[in-house]
Length: 153
Image 1: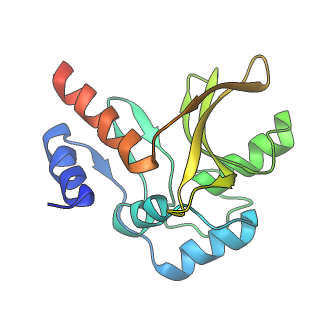
Image 2: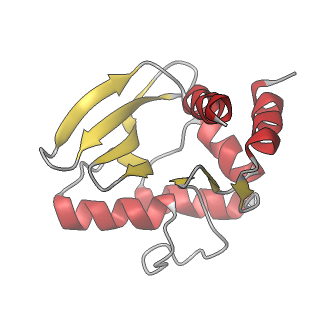
């Protein structure tokens, strides 16, 4: 079983909302809009599931709207662009989770490993700085979040 198959199983157990995978050309357009290539596991997330939510928490990805600058529906590109303009979020960060507007979980797209993965950081929206650097890939982060949620059920 691959790590993505494991996530599929966990999503079923969590009764998660899955927006639906997005086409390769939309993922490419999203990367071009932000000026960075996405980590491998996040690209796969976008292609397979698009956008997820469970336990009242949304894991931003892509929705069916490719007007990234005016989407108004939270997707990773629109939300990241908004936060760059509103609070000066550093250009190399991509927000994929908003925790009560106090913290944003992001990729540091400027720091890729040999496996084409990025550091996951937690941005403190009150102090306007990185509060944590997590030593996990996106797919590991998502898997742990799902496991924790299912364990609480």
